[in-house]
Amino acid sequence: MSEARSRQVVIAGAGIAGLTAALAFAERGYPVTVFEQARQLEAAGAGIQLSPNATRILRQLGVLERLLPHAVRPEAVVLKDAAALRDLG
Image (cartoon, rainbow, N blue to C red; front, side, top):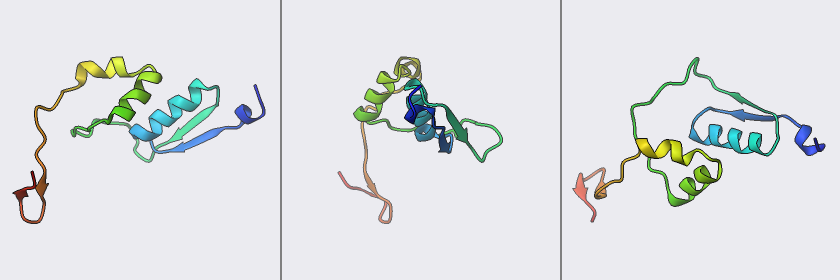
């Protein structure tokens, strides 16, 4: 193991960014520790929108295919002004 890869990578937070970073470092041979303040990870009950760049990275890490069966393509997007509660589009 090279000197750089013998260093421990520490990641704060086990959200989507933290877990993706942990996987990316681990795949490159770095020892990784993830710290999370929650006692256990649970579904938040909310959806997320993943950009094309995010899906490209998830594909490169080999996890996109496992996520796709849970994905829904939106039929439309409606933008609203939160203060006036009116459509922007």
